[in-house]
Length: 248
Image (cartoon, rainbow, N blue to C red; front, side, top):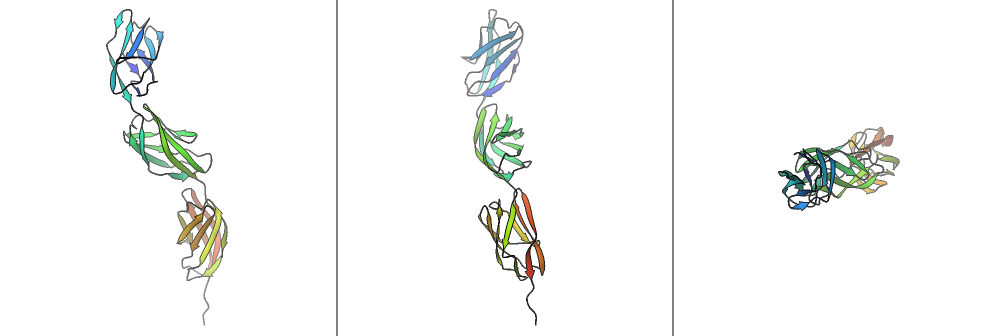
């Protein structure tokens, strides 16, 4: 007498299909010592029942006027517990893969990022990976994991949009570097790197629209300025002009 699924939440509420023979006029279905909260005779070979709350492994039995069946095992699964996300932010377009660690993840069927869900790949009971779906807008969303044991949330993931450079001031300085410049634009708060003429520049985010940058040494002439965050990069072509010092 197989049952499907053979596992469900400790809180109950799992719809279980029981197949076998002589199941007409089923009067009760029990999960261990507890009666199912709902029983429906589908056919002489099939009965559905909603599991009550419980823990551990219990035997499921069906009772008809002809007697009670032998028990078939049903496994109660606790709600998942998430311990960590391998990354807590990423591009608005999604497509990046993150790992979620915790316990009770072996039966994970979906991971929800805000209003969007994705199907995870189960690595083990303590780890799953998932390709992050695209976000609706930049900003933080809640992350939920659903397993046979229920749904658990509590983590936050931040969608980040591409950076955009609006102004660079001042936009000229000596080839020796060391010029303090201010870059304004949008989505600059999560900046990971700034380059001027291909060379890495020290920087400090002031807020989401402002960066403080110190130019590295460069070659005389116009140099591209590139700002990069987890979503990608924006380039201001010839955004800073290196000026050679005077010679006598």
